Length: 565
Image (cartoon, rainbow, N blue to C red; front, side):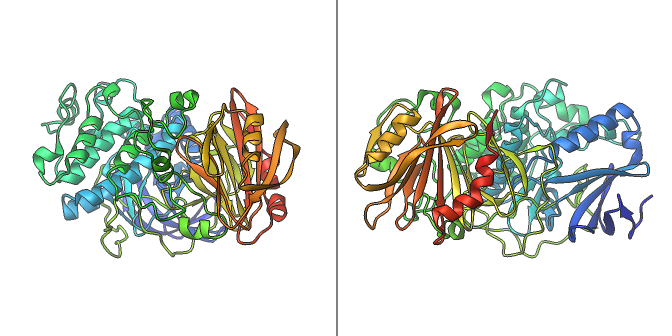
């Protein structure tokens, strides 16, 4: 049995026991080579006595190491000390949601909404990679002292539960948060996680659980074919729009729910504070536009809603993404702290005996934007060699750092892979545009660009590299500095270097959700080529007075490593 002071795997020194549950003990540990604190979960050896289960457990844990997102607790490493397996995870200072609910009861709707958005965002990045959590519950949701909620135990929750359920004298603690299909032993999907999140939100809003029973089996089966419960029926102060979202998430038929975390996150975000169109560096969703793959294939212009009805272009552009060049982009977006974490609570939902206390209650006037923290970030853990990590999806108004390694833009079609070194962050990740940034500049990839501008007026085009470059080059508000062809990702790519002809920023193009502007005093390079039935546009621009040439030297490694699946 490991003791305090022991060094596991020749690397992790056990400093403090911070939680104990039915399946594991959780320690604050010191990562000796990297000089930082981590959370180490030391599993009971009898949990993985079955060799097949042990092998599956290791595979699931390794798969979870590539999930990187500000609302996901990263699994950093796995190992074995003697006969005890262990998991190394980012350390979160704070408490789990179980502890908060037991102490405070029902939460204000604004706070419950913010936590739900964070959880849904974390689920969305896993669902995009085909990972289903299967154990979304308050004990697996951590509330950090920075005000952000994070989901933990991705990829290992189901196997851990299976192992724990085989031990004499133990009961499965997640039965209160089962989906109907889980209760019946059917196949789980991302919609199963949505149902479990709906139960968590119901409990946050009401302080109660909607289903009860005399035994775990009765509790689990009580929801099968049961109508979706209404939190507003228990707590009348729940806003009707939020009540409707929860009831849809709790539909007994998975086909009637939100299909995944991204879909329910988008719906919850509509309940946030009013859109402020005064800031030039914000991301806002256009009402009526749903960024589905089908919509992308239809190449709808931003002047049309999802049902084909025309909407004023000026109104649409007022809520599009505007990327202001220079260092101001990073100052206004802020920085993400990646994922930092492990729950002080145990796997059955019981609070930890020594959970780190949160400094102050987490409160915010905005249900959608957690406050930034000024605490220094721990050293970034590189993506393991030979693995390709998901590109983290930063919350609105923030960025998230990218540890060195290879990444995939799973949200884009076709997905792009590339490698980054130190210093890069993800600024924006959607299904139409990905923006990478660093203090010297930023690099964007956009697909299905269907509208460009000429003297401020939108011009619809059929997306293709040739038409796109030609149409942008015809904009009389731009000075075209250079035009030609270069090789990128093994393809012959059209190149256009430009700058505004005047002292005002100039709109270049839009997707159905976002607009991109050329900034004054900066040279912007566009690279366009056709791939798999669509056009891909790469934008490069220096920041904070850094010339395009200098930034191209820095960003060259990303372009040289670019490939497509």
